[in-house]
Image 1 (cartoon, one colour):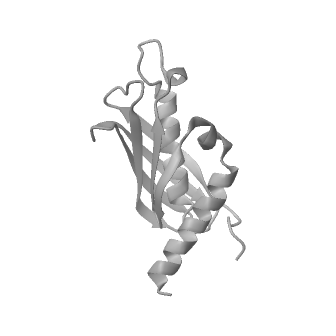
Image 2 (cartoon, one colour):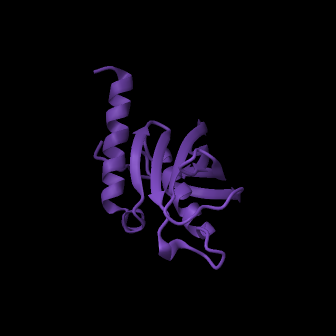
Length: 145
């Protein structure tokens, strides 16, 4: 097995372990489409109970989708990693029934810290939000060493 395929297998095992314990993502119907070291793609369908007073998806749910993708991307190397801070910019509303896709990409990883960009798009491929997260590695691992 090559180093690349080992890293990919480890990322998948980490994601499977995390998702099994991630009751928030499960409850919201967030699904993991793909995972690789430093990268995750997740989706969520906008449901009626996710709508705000303007009949568009509440920003908190969009944030949660982006934050979940960020979490899976930064934990893909079997080092327990938490969010240290983040920002989100909403650029377009999301409507009932739309399937949103969050793509998290690692931009920088050094020592205990990382930087990740997440774009959230609608079913037409239009970006609706941009999320930037900073990660911090703590003690422990997701899988046995």
